[in-house]
Amino acid sequence: MPDPVDPTPSPAATPTPAPGTTGLPSNVAAALACIPLVGGLIFYILEKQDQFVRFYAMQSIIFGGIWFLFNIVSRIIGAILWSIPMAGAIFGALWSFASALVQLGFLVIMIIAMIKAFTGVRWDIPWIGPMARKQTGETL
Image (cartoon, rainbow, N blue to C red; front, side, top):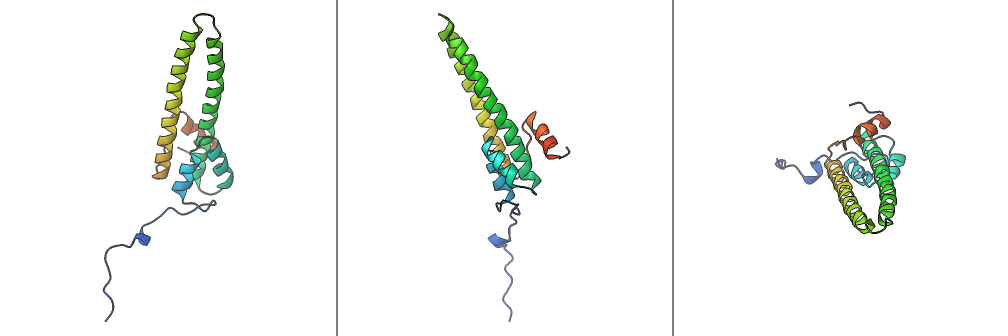
C-alpha cells in the first residue's frame, strides 16, 4: 500500500528567489546592494542579469553619491560658520544640528530601501529611483 501524501507543503517547497550572477538570492543581493556607494558599486559590477538587483545597485550608487557630496558641503559650510567671530558658535551649532537631522534622514531612507529590497518590493527613492531606472534601461 503506498504512503499517504502529506498535504502540508515542506519548507523546501516554498519558492525562493532564483540566484543571479552573484549566487545570492535576488532579494538578499538587492538588500546588500543598498549599502550606499560600496554595495551599489560591487553589485552593479558583479550582477549582469537580475534587473531587480541592478536597479537597487544603481539607486544605491546615486544615493550614496548624493550622501557623500552632502557630507563634503556640510563640513565646508560648518567650518565657515564656526569661524565667524562671536556668532560662529551659535550658527555652527545650529548648522551641526540641522546637518545631523539630514544625516538621520539619509539613514532612515537607506534602511527603508534595504527592507523593501529584502522583501522583494521595488521601491523608488524619491527623485533618485527614476534616475536609477533610466540608467539601468528600465521603463516605468
